[in-house]
Image (cartoon, rainbow, N blue to C red; front, side):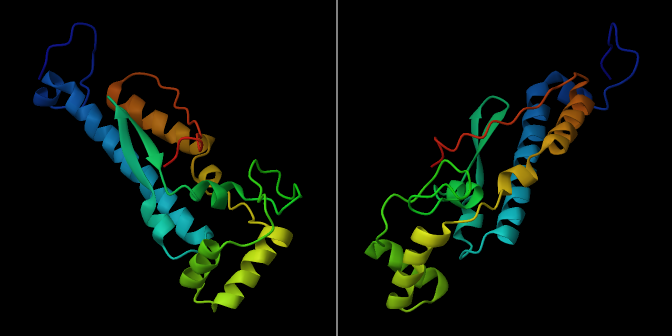
Length: 176
């Protein structure tokens, strides 16, 4: 084991890993990314009624050395935060339907997702856009909360011996 000058205890890391610490940290960050992805997928599956494509689209993407982003289909933000009906601010969300009519693509998507007839899909889309909107599911906030971030910081401190303050920034503007 390595001979530390000022540490009295061992770090619990092999000598090979101490020689190349970035691999240990990269593997640990990868495990964190996978766990967050799994947790968001489970919560999405539980809270969002969809064909499963939204759940499967949630993935981590490395964004630099020892960092990553979670990305999903662009409509995740609308399911997560909700969409107000035309002319109303029902859910206090930044997203609102702008036009009362239902496009053919919208109706076809509803038909494919829920097995509606085309006329039923148009009617459902119209009612959603103009009366009910899309209720927020608060998926991200229910998974990534202060307790969750504290647990990640604690694990990072255990591995590295350093104190961490882990933060999460929700940036739905750049989601793909």
